[in-house]
Image 1 (cartoon, rainbow, N blue to C red):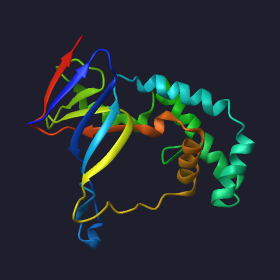
Image 2 (cartoon, rainbow, N blue to C red):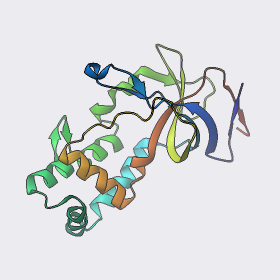
Image 3 (spheres, one colour):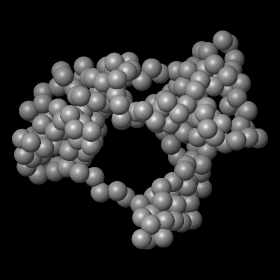
Image 4 (spheres, rainbow, N blue to C red):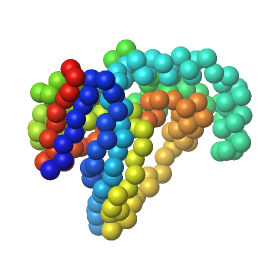
Length: 199
């Protein structure tokens, strides 16, 4: 049994867990892969709205023309439509980065409705939540590092082919070093004991 202590004087926690993995396509058998045992260092107690707001300011303050040239050097020439969708798209499956960050900063992002499935954990530490249906404990925050301790013998999760606008957004996040790109949520092992100190 592991013990995970949340300290009032530090926002960094380190723990071991097993990733849930991703199933193959049904026509390929539906086998779940990528269930690696990992050790994670995570920054908790972080308000996602604040992170999104700061990232929004960073994107708005960036030289977008220069950024587009950099990304085109990686992806090839982009159409104005693809670039516009990546930043300002409003369709549910083509939501632009600026739109998503604005909505997240205001707590209005409909794409995170799944978060309603969670409630605050009784330990009372920001970033630690419990799934209402399963009772599983999850911890969320900004990932500092993730190292594989034991690789899934079935291999990595299947790679999903992303659309052009998603690839553009991913490159904007990477090139500008946006913190929202490091936001993660992990399921903690059922036998982990949570404690807090200094609160």
